[in-house]
Length: 257
Image (tube, rainbow, N blue to C red):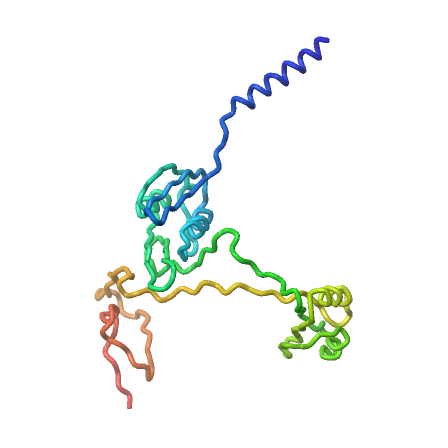
C-alpha cells in the first residue's frame, strides 16, 4: 500500500514538473521583402545553418568564404529590423555585402577579409538533389569483361543513347519506367556489368565576376628595403597591362632579341 502511494505521488510530481516546463518555440526567421523588415528568434544556429535559411527566405544567391566560422552560435531575438541591421546582428563580426543583380536575384557575400574570397555557394535546405531518371540506366563494364553493351541493351529492349567507351560506360534508354525496373532486376548481379539508374543533377549556381567597384582597395605596397634574392616571376612573350593596381610590383621589361 505504501509503495503504491509512493509510485502515485512520484508520477504526480513528474506530471507537475512537465507542466511547469516552458514551451520551446520553434526558431524562426521572417524576411519581409515588401516592407524591407526582418524578424528573428534564433537559438544556437551554426553559420552554415544560418546561411542556408537566409538563402531560403530571401531567395538570394549566397556565397561564403571557405573555412569561415562564427565565434559562437547565432542566438538572437529581434523584430522589425532593416535588412542590413538584421544581417549585422546575425553574422556577428563577419563582413558581408549584398549586391543587387539586374536580371537575377541579389547576391549575399559573407567573408572575413575580402568579398572576392566568398566563392563557396550555399544551397538552401531542401534544395533539389540528384533524382533517378525513371527510364534510363547506366551500365559500367567490369574489369576483364568483353561483353557487348549494344547486344545486352537490345535483349533488354533498350537503346544505347550515350557512351564513354574508354571507361566502359553506357547510357541505356527504355520505353517506360516499368521496363526499366524490370531490366534493373535482371541486371543486378550481372557478371559483366555494374548497373544503376542514371541521375539528373541540378545545375550549380555560377558566380558572376564581381564588378570592380565591389572589390576592396588593393593596399599592399612593394617593400623597397627587402633583401636581394627575392623570388621574381618572368613572363615570356606575354603582354602585360601596366595600368593596374599591381603596377608598382612590375620590374622593367627586358628585350633579348
